[in-house]
Image (cartoon, rainbow over all chains, first blue to last red; front, side, top):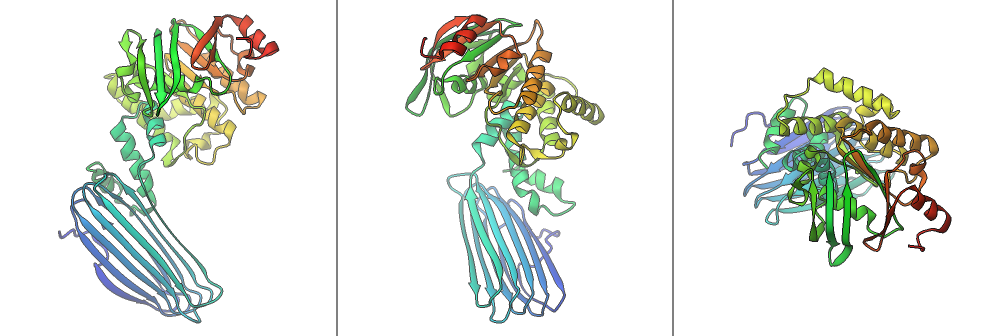
Length: 194
Length: 244
């Protein structure tokens, strides 16, 4: 679909050397089907990688995200946060693996994937995985898939915020940790198409 | 202002309101007292259009309009406000953004021009000071991490911002210390005028020490079993709800 603003290439392999930091940001907008396949080696001591992503689907898109985060050296740190909203009859699949190699002590690795499903037809599958072969490791992963909260919705409507506007606010609040700087208006416009 | 006739309402298969008749005139404050499970909160929920409650019989007219046919946001625009017993947290949305959206939507519905940003902020600051809310709360996410008392205070702040013609306070006094209670009462009393009315739903009688109701009702098992004046509050105080 040729969205020029897309920062990271869809299939990629990265080596992060000692003391360096890699930051990646993914944005998948309505109408785009995407395969994002990224493999990151934290190869030297103290290397860091921080990934953020958001996806928005409103028709029959297929979005797959695969991340392999390989902690190969001691004292490395990685964070991953992917939030997205699946509407229409879209399919979203998240596969995330964190591997902590033997000897990669002092690793910190966090991974989260949160999804909102808007329709009966949309499908979300999320598989966060951890493989840990080192000691003294701080790791966590979490995934949630849910619907927009009805209590929040009614609360906002009872204050006079129309249903559609209330849903937009809810969706933006859900996405806010992963909206790239300077792109809020564009994301808001895309959310309004859901 | 408000006329409720033979109102029956259910949640799931369970009938909670079993024929409520209630008329509130402009300028009146009505207290609805009753034991737990009587249907008090259901009454507030039904009047504001909570989707999980189904009205099975009866009618509610608000200023000559069929209230039950209106969406929750339309009821708000018409001047109805519910102070929630359990105010909802909305992570990621600041109080300022929340109130701005509420006021903008209402003004649009009423055909009024948008409120200027400076004017809005001034109003917000004024109303926060009025309920003794720390001005920093304007930047905080709606109700997230607020204590019970702060949440109730924030409800009264919202009420003061929206200046409803009919305020419904659902157990706003529960869990409040005396200072917070006085602030809530002050908020209700400040809105008191010949055009505005309120329904105070409560399990306790505490709030009624600071707000004088014109009419007092006792709600039990989905029906209003007694209506009168201040003497009912005193009777409950001394002998509880079993006498009704």
